[in-house]
Amino acid sequence: MDCHKGEGMPLPSQIPQGLVADAVSLDDEGLAWGRDEAVEILDSLTGTRVAVAEIEVHRQEAWGLVPVGTNWSCALALGELSTAYAKRSRAEAREFLVAQADSAVAFYELIFDELDEAA
Image (cartoon, rainbow, N blue to C red; front, side, top):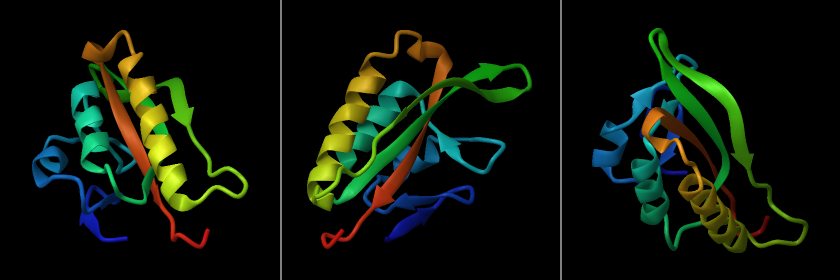
């Protein structure tokens, strides 16, 4: 996968550099974004084979961002082509993000999966 270099987390190269720069670093070397930026990232991946495998929700505390235990995940279904999985996972991830009521205080870590068509 062609990747931007994040804080130890490979990011798909299709994500605009401006959105990569907007990321907030997490203690586990991951990156997180506000809800609107996370949705923009999903939009930037339209037409690719990059799937969103998981979203971890974090909340800002005085000592930093902490996981809140509200997570979302999506797995490749048996017999599903990678392009279909990528499209489905991004659509479901978008639904999850849009449904988040407390988006003003939450940050979302997007965990990506890019598969070959043969999968």
